[in-house]
Image 1 (cartoon, one colour):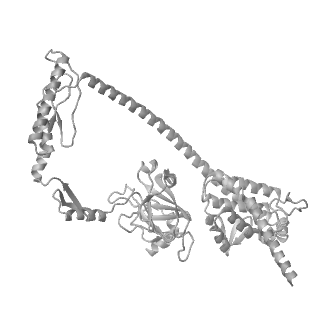
Image 2: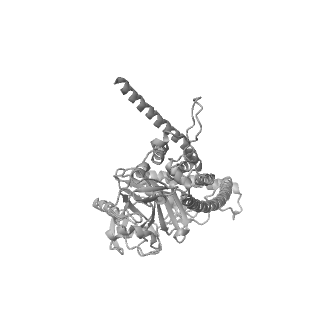
Length: 554
């Protein structure tokens, strides 16, 4: 099993059609190229418990995992159930789990159903919000159906368990049946019918009255209660009610055979029915000993009725009600068909939108590569060397500014999140943010856990420029209008400002895909940096005041 854990980095290269031998057991998923002991956030999967099912886990990114479930016993075509646990998580860690080899074409996940989740501190099963669950056909997995759901771990010490729906184990069923059997109830009988393929017993349960079982079965299967058919003019042959309660009742309207008037026959038949019912009710109250016997005697009395009829007015009212219900059902079917067409159109639009998103991602990657090539070519010129010597006092070329502005605009409309550690290059304890900007790796990791856009932007600006540069610069290079004699300070480098916006964009894209929200939060970058410059200048002035106070005291 340790060998299996070490092969996490090559799991994504295995074909989806490989045979899955068994469930994963304490399976640690490590990133590609990682060597060493697992850290917090390297998820550990386990399904070696009763009703557990998870055959394989592939590491896609730091935030995304592909899960493969094992098929049913003796039927490899059916793959539906999953049940597994996850541990060694980080607080506020967000992940996306893709169950990639479902066999069902139609699932309740399309109609609002969601997987179940619980943890050690919250043992009650709860459903994941349906807005975080997606069920679709994926071309990357041989057009299998994929169920993806997003989840955020909130407690590091908890072990989380995910399942297809409420699990009900074989052991729990056996305990329940054992408790019933220990009660020695007369109407409950448990017998061994046989054994399953895995040598588990198959129970036969019989719930019945304590009478003789053979006689009871014969009476249930053979005894039939006869109820007369309802007619307007005469009584048809009696229908039959089987032991499952299926009743053959048919309203028929036919001409009388004896030539009597309809009103006279109806009046006489109703009087006969009322007289017989009153007589039978009186006898049942005095002679019967239970409600069952009274019901049987009433049924036998109804079998002997010759003149049971239904008035014409009642028949016509029932017929009108039936026609109205048919009309309503027709309208409902039309509405359902119209709704189905609308859903099909929306599905086509979503498919086109997904293709546009993929194309936008490719264009953004191409733009980034072109930017890196352009910066490498400009790096050999004297302008870049002079900028390094004078602490970024010279602005980049207009073409470079245009390239950065296009990159910023393109990233604003890109909705898919880019994993942070896959995008930036780590080398010799440094992190490359792009455009030849390197920061310390330890400080970069500390920055990723910073809460709030404002604090994140301010700390990143200090890492890129430093406090000595920021206190003598401004964002736009324009003098403030609050002071009449204010002197404009040199502006910050535009390409470094674009790097700050890109880093903040990558952070926001991990939290939301709403373009309006992303644009609104990115528009506050200049404000945050201005506040940081004001804070640095204020702290410098306070330090000068303290020094002058000490000098005056001396």
